[in-house]
Structures are given as C-alpha cells and as structure tokens.
Length: 370
Image 1 (cartoon, rainbow, N blue to C red):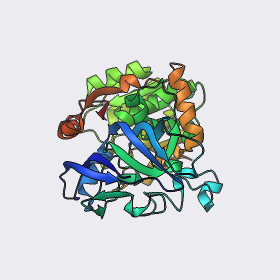
Image 2 (image 1 turned 30 degrees about the horizontal axis):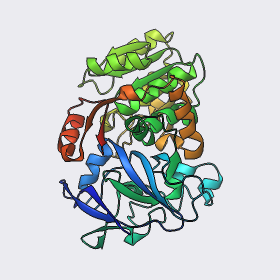
Image 3 (image 1 turned 180 degrees about the horizontal axis):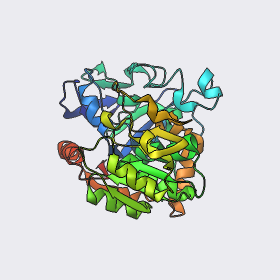
C-alpha cells in the first residue's frame, strides 16, 4: 500500500511549493523512512535552480516505517539518520575506502542523474502519478522518503531528531575534513575561514583532535562568538572587502611564531576566498577547501611556495558505517555539540522563512520538523 506524504517540490525554476506525493513500498534493498527532521543548507536552496523537478533536501533523520526483505541492519521502528553519499561497497573507489566517491551511486559524480543506481526504484516516489526524483537520492523535505538501504544509518533513540538530522552534511563535512582528510593531531595549529555550519564543525573537530591554537576568522561578531563556544582559542574579525585576508594573515602569523598555521580550512563557499587558506599556512602546510567552491578561480602560484598542499575533500571523505557512529559517540560523550548548532526549527509550511533566515546568516543551522 502506498503512503501519502506532504513534500516540498521544485520545478527547478528557483521556486518551490508544498503538495502531496505518493511513496511506494520498499523493494528488496530499500527502506521507507518517516522523516522527523530535515536540516536546511545552502545546497538545498541552490537545488531550486537546478532546472529539474525534484524533492529538495539531503539532511534527514527519522523512524523506519518499512524495510525491504533484504535489509538486515535496521528494522521497523528504528531511529535512523540518512547519508547522501551512498556507497555500493563494490566499485573501484569503495573498495579503496573512498565510499564518498562511489562510482555507481554518487549523486555528485553521476552528474546529478536523478535515477542513478543509488536512487530507489523510479516508480517508488510519484507526484500526480509521475515519477519524481529526490535531491541527492534522499529528498528529506518530505514526510516520508524511500531510499536505498545503504543510505540508512541506525542511531540511538536518545538522540533528538533535529540534532541527528544535521550529521549527514555540515557536521560530517567539517568533522571529516579534520579527522579523515587533514588528520589533524594534538598541538597542531588550525585556522578556519568562515564560521557557519561547516566551519563550526571544523572547529569542534579540531578541538576534539587537540589542536592549538584554533583560529576562527569571520566577518560577523556573532558568528565568532559561537565559534569561541565551539572551541576556537582565538577569533579574528575580518573585513568583507579584504578577500586576500592581508590583515588577518599578519595576525595569524603573529599567533604562530611567524610561520602560519599547520592547516587552514576554507568554509565560506565564496569564490574570491578560494586561495585564502594558502595565505595562512606555513611552508609544507595544508590548505583545505571544504565549502564546495566550483567556480573558476585564479591563484597566484607563489602562494604554493613552498611544499604547500591544497586539498578539496568531498563530504569529509565520509565512510558512513565508520564515521556516523564516531560522531554519535562524541555527541553522547558531550565532546561534540549538535543541539547547540540547531538555532531555529520550522514546519514544512515555513520553509520560505527557513531559507530566508539561512540566507541572512541568522542560524548556525535551521531544521524543518515533521
């Protein structure tokens, strides 16, 4: 029996509306999830302009409503979080531990193909009797979603759904960029450019790793205050017009014996800031561009002098079966703050306001509650 579900729908024209969809029963390797909370990020807003009809949303947590007969790791009634980088575990990249780069299921690597192998069967989600794809093969801005079993990670029922929902994007990206990509160690120095949802989780992970100093850089005083609460040891207010971070670079070097930091993470998604982390690191340091800049930028090659590494990791190099439990354990041990990141919640009917507040920079993280 099909399930009726209220969902956000976009035609790819920059707008969206709320309407009823129909979600089918899971096939062998699929799971039907009743979404209880869906995080909102800039990618969800961008998806309104992808020129495709789809259900937005790629950060979600909820309760398993039904499972296919081949699913063994979760059962009906289990609390789960969703992961958009869905591994197949068998392709070239998955076998090398690069599960976030799965060649069969990746929504990113497949060129946004709405019915890649990672997508639940095409007829599983219908709008007015026609199949409708779901953003990142999840479509979490819907009361119900049908997903591949590999997208579902069991979580303890004690974790509030709003906190659990944000793990599968900004938290994982920030945490994994520090732990998996940079492999920051105790007493190493870190600079973080941009203290929004991703940047705050870079700061948290750096704190957990024992980094010192942890230097937060932003143009907004309020965001820097939150960065300090998340673990930044120093907060530097930058000028929006200073895209080369000339003044900030001087201060960073003063804090690091004139060398620059061991690592610098760019978390603004502003193309003009793409080269900025290279300015802040020492010789043989590592710059990481984690915000998803995809525009063409120009970089002075002298910024690479000498032996500097520039890395653009995807999704914190996520291995969902390994990294989600790590994040959850840090949360349960009160090392990682998640509830504090959720600064506002909304109903699906208030999605416009959620987007507006996000674009105005009001929230560390806004979450839709079903």
